[in-house]
Image (cartoon, rainbow, N blue to C red):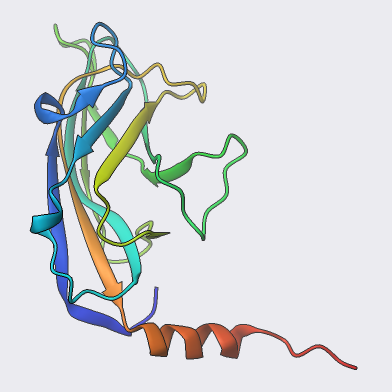
Length: 167
């Protein structure tokens, strides 16, 4: 993103055991309720979210999993209107519980989605390599980082990106 981020970030760790699955027998979509008291009302209204770490175990054997943000973004496009948050790396196949995936964010090229700040709910979907929600998660933990940006500096930066229209 840009270098106008605030020094304070919000980190939210989500365990699948505390999320509400879309289907208890084959969960591929989880929603977590975040108390509004967690967030400071002193945060900017310009915000991005990224994943800084994750451990996931699928219910079956899956060669790949993609984690998508289901809350709407302003800087992402995917044909089926899913916003890809991160691609965890498979670290093993054929476990009794399924495949194991791990993710840590690199220093560069991290996916940062522009989202609504201080969300009351967070919904993530787990998509398999065929692009459908079939990566049923048995257990997992995901840590998200919400970065807040100086709203005035962000507006100036965006305005500097536009090409003036000739009249």
